[in-house]
Image 1 (tube, helix red, strand yellow):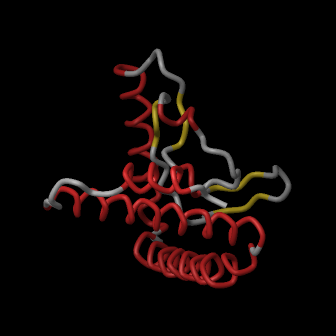
Image 2 (cartoon, helix red, strand yellow):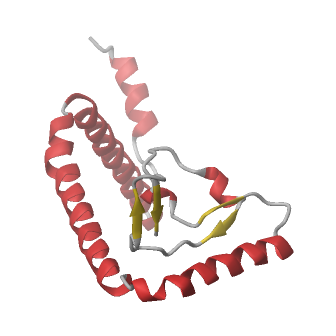
Length: 154
């Protein structure tokens, strides 16, 4: 139980003796907003930690479906637009020119393909692609498969 003196000290400490101004309302609004955001963050963190299925079922699964559908359409369009076995020699020349340019401009750098990191098989980020000389290889067609020599001509 609170004594009368303790109650008076608390009352006098928190009692507004000055007139309320607009900055007070702004301060209290910001404080309430921070408290609400903190509460929502803690609830969100709790749901992600203890009820992952909610996040997976209602966010990740639909998002992964959209991602897969997008890349399915993208791959179909790329195969339709870029599939041209007759342009094979031209594409090989472009790769050769890029390698020759590497010999002149970026000889100190290592070489790698220009394929984006998110399209690789590995789940890790390929940081080396940021510092290496990137060579675009746009060969989409399989032209020949030699089973005896175990070669594939793209």
